[in-house]
Image (cartoon, rainbow, N blue to C red; front, top):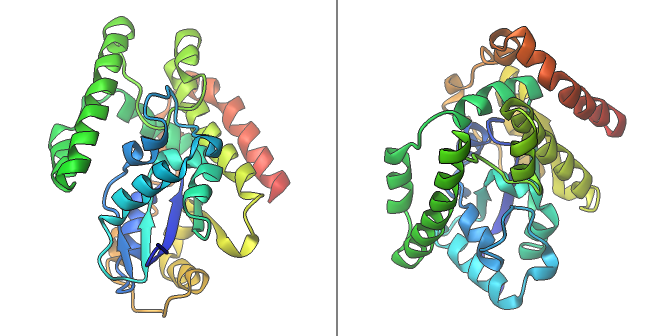
Length: 283
């Protein structure tokens, strides 16, 4: 049956501000939000794959129906449903195959700031209260799938943590485990950001321009009201008086540049510069 809502897919590398933007957009009475990243739902088409770069060729009609059904659990009766699982940055064609009329908003944040923030997450212990709140929001059938999927990943990652003293956090690009064996963790975090940004930008070339909107995080936080109005026009919803704008702060801009040591900055600068050069080249 036809999907009774318009999907809005918010793309962005982890720690790029996607949660902030999703929650602000979801203030609109015509928009509902999936309140957590739900990577395991998207991976139902290939749950045993060791990375997140899902191939649309693996998407059967049965898998698509299962993904749509479980994502639609969060929909009530609004015209739009916004979803922001960060691993979707690595699989835009797959997401487009699930939702062929989806609107894509791509949020891009300064790579140095993202790497500094992500690096802290990589080195932090699991946030069990958050994980429990997330699991409690699922229907029983989804919670079972989530628990099974998370337990399997946790076991595999525990083995790696014992061996290497860290776990894999965030989107898993192809080859991330090999990179962890050969490069510094900080470089891998930078490569994770780079893969997410470049894969999204390259794959969005095949999406009609009227279905995508790129936004730079730094510009958004300096003028959130104007950008939320721009998003309203792009999505096709009536403008409103936006609340919670005071939760938007530009003070985090440049935090990575201020916090990383000279040696850490030296490790990631070539990766970040290459991505920024590409973005300037393609616009």
